[in-house]
Length: 374
Image (cartoon, rainbow, N blue to C red; front, side, top):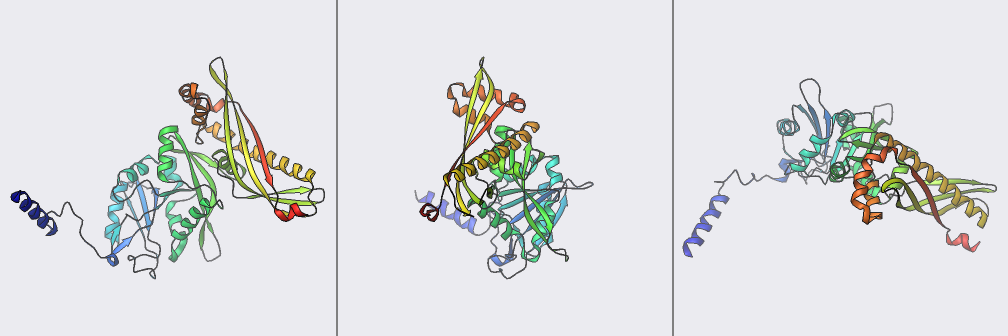
């Protein structure tokens, strides 16, 4: 027993003394580290397969450096691993990837395929699939990373994520969610951003640009405007907008607060023949011009039903044209009919593009208390 304890103590001393440097990382002061927050990945040019751009935000030199300007580094190499390693030679501080929580993909890279990037994040010990994922529409990830200027783009991306959770922005997605959808469904959606100039001095900002749809890991197309709102309804993410309904005397402004989708398969001769989609929307009256009657409320509900139905139909038509069931329609049909669940999962990918879908919307509208009193 004494021999065993002595051996364990000796092993501990050897580890602490640095004799096993291959097992333990070198200790570093936080002030000597560049804590990266954002990574952008683009397709490379010429002999280079990939270009990586990283940013720290204002914490360029660790937790004590909030007053420092954003540190932006960029490298082009033959692989993502080589590009990340090359960052160490570009900074006076030790580049640490463990704080990266925002990942941007360039459009050209997504046209070639996103699998290598997602695989890398899944396997790297410092990174991971918990990062928030965006695709830069019509531009490069490098442009997006540098859009924040000296202040960095990290706060803007964090705001978009928070607003999404509060229902004030489009749906946000992690790399893990996109990776999982690609593996299980063969397609996935993720939010898109665009870089836009804000003034004549060349200042730029990141703005929401709908959603990008991936099929087999490659960009299939974008959903924007009403189609983007339709996608949000299909995935039970209430659109972050308000609807204005004109009336004979005045108008009503309605704020959508929630949505839920019910899928019902129609089976004929043992095969999936069509699908009924019923979207149940909840909304509240935000503004009223004139006196609101019960007839007016019914007119408002019908107007909301019609617009949301068009949104869903437009989104489905685009997804079917790409053969991309990124909203998980097949899985929902399987859950709706457990007895045929496995068969429906097998049939849906084959028939999705030409599957007849009937869309209906039911809106539950609430009025504010002062309106009830009037």
